[in-house]
Image (cartoon, rainbow, N blue to C red; front, top):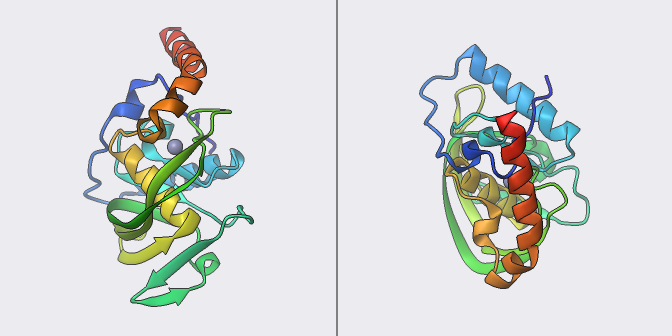
Length: 188
Ligand code: ZN
């Protein structure tokens, strides 16, 4: 089922996600619905907060993006990213490292708003998948950026918090408008 995507101004986006202690059929259904919602919106990642649930759960699939490469390493060996997509990350723990790399980012909760964001180039991830199995990998490129963006969501952090002061100032009118519209819609 395609779920409604929460927009900037909805307080759930600022909530830290609760740890998922048990992967119930409801959680598995939520994972499925989040994939469906992400694909329908043509996104690369989607966090539980973006469908109104403050949980440590995010889904990612970078296969749809052809012009921005991703790298992935498992047990020190480079692997084919496509073979490991899509990813459901439950209770992810990450460690970002490397020099900051700047790249364009958007967010399904901020329609039509894009900005360059600097983030460490690589990330080390440990998470549980939808079958309850723990797994680890290293990522670079777009996948690293997507993981960092999504894990930020799980902690109530949004990409506007990572923008330069200048970029945020330039987008202020649009951000204010979006926030006001979201709040007005929630009151109805
Ligand atoms: Zn986002």
